[in-house]
Length: 112
Length: 116
Image (cartoon, rainbow over the protein chains, first blue to last red):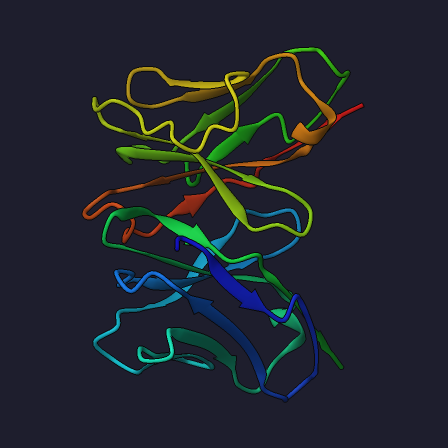
């Protein structure tokens, strides 16, 4: 019940396109859903996070969409740029799961 | 320092040897986490320290793994009798905890451990 399933494992998008990464969870007590971005050789860094009281949160080109009934949330990167090439991790926490449970990561490559 | 510092950045060891990995968290951060990142895997929680509270060791995979945090600051993760399956990137993160599990984690760049 603590698992967060993330897809796809890797993604190639052309510059200017939309990158979409999906995550699904089982634990209905989860109430905090962050996304972390990791560049090669660096540690992950918080990108954007959402609580289940809203269905969408946007920060610049990055948007989280949240579907509580489906227990799914996704990251959309609009106008994807080569500088967005990184590994993205979704995560969740809440209820008795007081520590973040991370997905397996999506390696995004944005081509010219 | 400006961020979380981990050392060494790379460590190659022989199977059966002990290794120590060090983490210097951001000054003033009360919480410290260790995670393990294996190829193709997510971030696996290992251990959590918060102030003077007893650490949450629920993620340590075996009794060969231990960690301590001295003076509420620097932390050392020790792996005894290393095995090849211990090869991974070990990440340290710190935070100012308001609500555990909902705080912003600041990660170091990790230690790449290779067990031959």
